[in-house]
Image 1 (cartoon, one colour):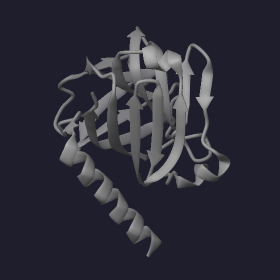
Image 2 (tube, rainbow, N blue to C red):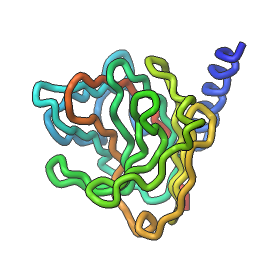
Image 3 (cartoon, rainbow, N blue to C red):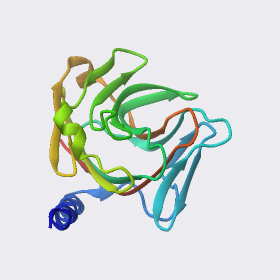
Image 4 (cartoon, one colour):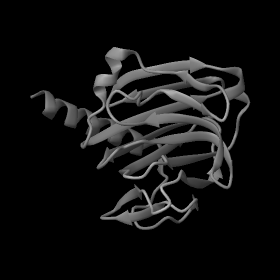
Length: 198
């Protein structure tokens, strides 16, 4: 019964997002996105896939458009070591990214927390009791709200973190999906929908 309710909740969240937002991923190709690095990004069965390549380095897939204030919802499924993430208000030089990452990682590794790359490191991690909401090997729904200085995240309908930070508030740039270095990583993404806020 709990699994059925969780599935229903995910459907309701996705439906609400589609009602107000617009898709970032068309389910067909990587149009309006840019690949950074040598890791694999491709479309399979209407889903966006990131997979480690032979170089086993960091890789990113960034939106061509920049987004300042928004609500982003997306679904992800970690088929292998799911060390990944969603960057916001970011820029990149090669594969060195500047900005903030909402973590997508294996169980117990702080999915939904916020990390500042090449800067202050972890800004905020989930409470230990909130690590349980990640479902490894299954579809998960992430919601990210970025508005001014404030960032909040939800995982499978559960609030994970809320933070306000002046430096984040001054940031601007694209949204990007990350694949971590080290190899052996494969993550599927779908239903990426964004609602821009004024």
